Length: 140
Image 1: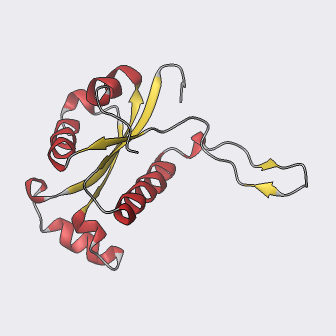
Image 2: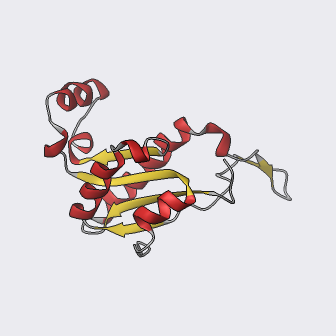
């Protein structure tokens, strides 16, 4: 990933309870990590000799969104103009499933128009990511 010309952000529904916000960020981060394993840095050692697993090499701002704005953004990200971006999403449907098999089964029976997105992560060309998210404030 070219850190000068690329960017990665998460947009999470600010109306969600804190625990669901934290869970959404964790799920999106793990999903991105699977898609982009080269962005994690090497393990580091502290002065005491303890090893700490490498963390991501660049910041990932977590932005505030509404369920409507996130839905609109996710639908836009399906368009061919955005096919070169890496996109992860987390939905209410996924959050309510107890197993991955249940998630697969339920997702296959629901049209995209019925999904409620808790959050979306977008990585890729800085200009495209900024076009989608540049006016959004940080989630604090």
